[in-house]
Amino acid sequence: MRILLYSGKGGVGKTSVAAATGLRLAQLGYRTLVMSVDPAHSLGDSFDLSSQGDAALFHGSTGEPRAIRDKLWIQEVNIQREIKRHWKEISSYVTSALRTTGLNDVEAEEMAIFPGMEELSAMMYVNQYLREKTYDVVVLDCAPTAESLRFISLPTTLDWYMKHVFTLQRRVMKAVRPLLNTLGPIEAPPDSYFGNIQSLFQKIEGIDTVLEDPNVTSVRLVTNAERMVLRETQRAFVYFSLHGLCVDGIIVNRVLPDEVTDSFFDGRRAAQQQILGEIESYFAPVPVSKAPLFQNEVLGEAGLTRLAEQLYRDGADPAKITRTDKAYEFAAGSNGAFEVRVRMPFVQKGEIGLFKKNDELVVEIGTIRRHIGLPTTMSAMTPSKARMERDMLVVELRNTA
Image 1 (cartoon, rainbow, N blue to C red):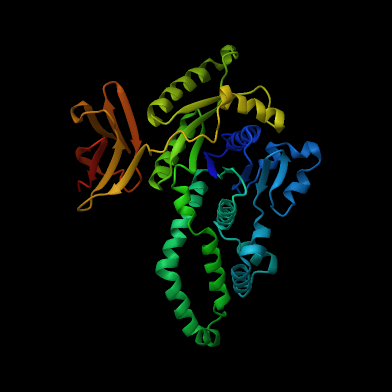
Image 2: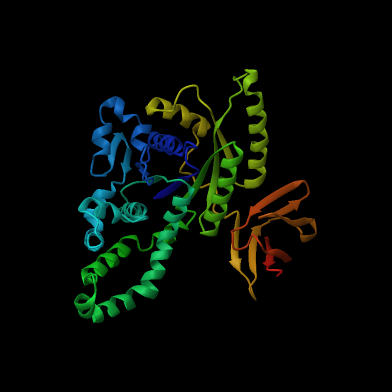
């Protein structure tokens, strides 16, 4: 099964791109599921279900996959259903604890929906579909960038908790529960609470390895040719790389088409062309594709088909594996240093220029530049030395203070 993860700043059109991709995959014969991981679901709206009289039914459904056409399903995770299905013991305990603080029933139930519940529920579904081979391709329409990063980091975080904290915490709580229930202001969580946590972990166990496998999972970042949007896309690229995921495509949406000749748009067109050049330079060698700004809103199967035709010309297959190498990797070095590892095949060390600009490491080869955004922990460091390891350029960064 292939997993295609579409992320980007809110409002760039990633839901439309994800939906159009799902439509193209279904047309190519893949059993395809497009799943919304964004709490502010708009996937059903993208397929214009309201015009079919189905929007209310869909948004009020149980969150199960819904057939749109042959070989195409969509799913919007329904957190209320998921709480009853997967989080019952945890939610019940938290709700009862919150009631003791003076909150009424409705307030307590709302407060018991923790950040990350929806993303984790979606992760369970992905793992289930992978194990059961339900679909050929799952397209994930992710929340805006920050939530997307939380989505991909959840398995690692939960794995660390289960290995280092969970067992000890459960044993300690079992020993002190009678005392806490006697003296404490609220009852301690029952053992079924911890059993629920263990059950949840088992349902996503192994998904972190799947997400980091470029032969299974690919990340596509959707952006616009605008300065503020580009900056967030660059940050997303850095952090997806930091988490070990392979970004194999950048999609620039809503580019002014050539047929727009009104002088009113001259300034906007010039700005877009400049930013498009920066995008090509920054993300190379990751391919950049473009979709035009359409005259009408991209809505329904007809609109999504037009978008898919622009994104995947000449019958291109969105599920095809185009990249397995990460553009670059971050690693811990020796004596407090960090390393940036950049694949540079067919290049000699003497051909490479290297300097740091703000929070970017810039690598030059002739007239070509590669801009590498640095994580926050490395942005204040200074390059101290560089070396070639076969076809890999390794740059060491250290704190100068």
